[in-house]
Image 1 (cartoon, one colour):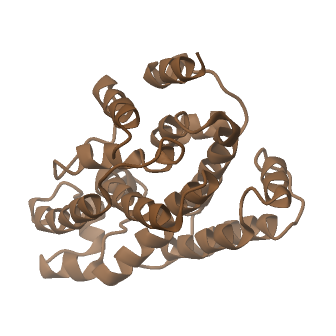
Image 2 (tube, one colour; image 1 turned 90 degrees about the vertical axis):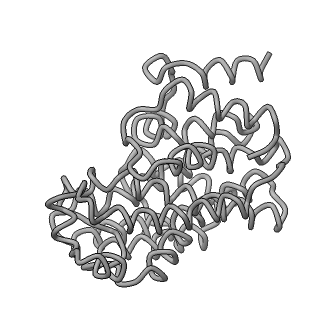
Length: 277
């Protein structure tokens, strides 16, 4: 009955789901990872949602800051929370409890904060830098989730690869969204090769000259998906399920950043039931 209930919630429309605390925050702001977390074993589900909600707060540091320096201040604020400082925030208390219990590792969360500092830089210079940034954010987040669910070292490495692929898809999906914020996180060397600048991408995120850049990035994402593909134990597969959505997104160069549909949720459910991503 527990599995049936979880699947019913997963297949429901977002507005039909009920949850509180970190789960509510994750559901509102990162519905992909919320959907994946629903398939985690019940004793670990809450911690997985807390991890995802924490990641969202790191990701929004640059989004809500008027200047890069202010984003670094927000990230430092979260670094102090991870180090044990008491703060007033809806995530601070549950995060402190999870850290004290050893459920979430301080060093790994601190490394996530370090990786997010890339977003406060003026630009990401090279494709290699961009790849490292995604490995340190989306990839590292998936690896932490895998460890939380009890993955072996080899499973953790595969899930980190799949998580990085999801990060690639997220970047491709969010170009227009970032442009509306006056931001571009694409590697400058690829843009320059197409005669583009970051400012031009912000002004014209659908410019035809951007398509070769997106094709290169999407090809790397698909290669990561192929590298990580295969069966995973039911106990840990929730950490890898966002890759199912990445595979769907990377079939097209300009995937929609809109709400997920029934077919997306059905694909995640099918992967869970098959035990294979």
